[in-house]
Image (cartoon, rainbow, N blue to C red; front, side):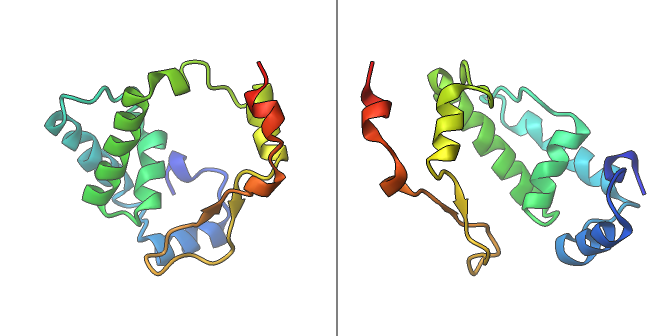
Length: 134
């Protein structure tokens, strides 16, 4: 087990091995392979490249390094293209809390045919007068 798996139960580590192809023996090499791809995209400002952050993207793409890098690049590219959206983005922001209370996001229990989680927006729960009142 690596420090990146600290706090995970043996059952969770085994599930990650079986379902995500996570191998603690090569975990740092997998992370480094994704990190090494960053130089191929000098147009993107990668703000975080620490092991724990890259590991999130590897897990999201079942340890396919190229797919994990593509997701990482898309994440930072989106943030770069939408600076105003992320400038003051804080989890304790009243607007963010309100969106969560209003029913965003809803996550379906089953995944799509590619194994991806499906998020739902419960727009009927939103009070639009709060969103557009200024």
